[in-house]
Length: 76
Image 1: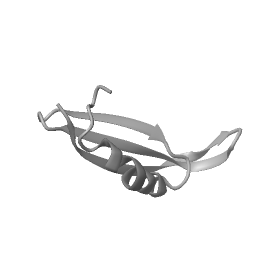
Image 2: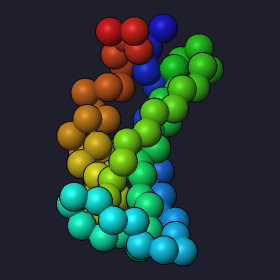
Image 3: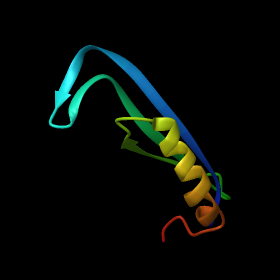
Image 4: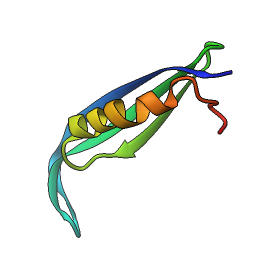
């Protein structure tokens, strides 16, 4: 089994009240969802918090990680 496809899904949802953390105050929640599909047709998902610029996270994954993942063993 090998990784055949990797898609990134940057998502942002506004929240009613600002969320305050030690890193600042945020009016929305942003995450990056990664979708990996194998040549056997199995699909898996992972996610990470992306406080700012989730589209930039997606570009980094797409430009730097995807070329290394295509054809790799998904269990490695």
